[in-house]
Picture 1 (cartoon, rainbow, N blue to C red):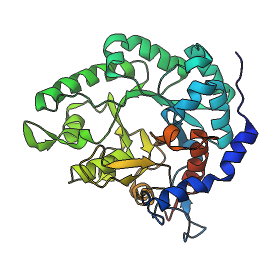
Picture 2: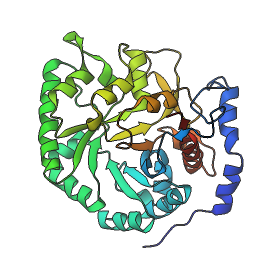
Picture 3: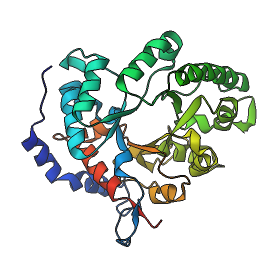
Length: 328
């Protein structure tokens, strides 16, 4: 299979101005110019890294344009060079580059020293083709497979009871093959049941799903969005109350939208350009070392100049993640 190599000179030209994108955003008033995001400035050199390098990965949706344009081979090569060690899939196709099999993708992972951390699939995929999904997960070496969809669009108690029963069945089937099933949040999961406004849906899902079979991937930005839009909780408290149920984080930065009720309440931005207090969040975690940390920027392909585009954001964000330090 042909390997599509990235134009290194073009990439380096883009990275030479890597601070420009963040500074320009600050000048527009969209991003605070001096946001406290847990950067190493003013932190003692003896402070420890909050995110272990070996646990640092990327959700491939952040560079989906490059997967489509260049293919998995070139993207994996570049991510490995940057320093990422884990990837989470957002599909198993590579656009016009050509067809590729799960077995070929696995070889590319191995060739580039990468491990598959997880994969986002649709609820319909689990309903109609669960065994095939688990076959692919095993081929890729996935320890977990999940969905970025809400458990259901029916935000009633009965709707969540039915959704939990589905997830429990899927999770039991996955566990029989050594795989964890997980659900990734947006803000809507932190809203309240339409027929019981005293019941938060996220709490209900945790209660109704079997902790042996159903796990959670916390998207940190959207959890903060949930806390802003539907107040009454702190995201870190969920993880500390159920640490074994959170194998993965989406480490996504953002700035608040003017209207807290708009969308997910935040606009996602490049890591380090937002206001999410990651040092505080990670510093309060108990049971450190069991989590996988996946950088993601949903708007990456559209928001970045080219070259290097979304891969430039991936490189800048990786370095800021590595530099994130704490006092513990």
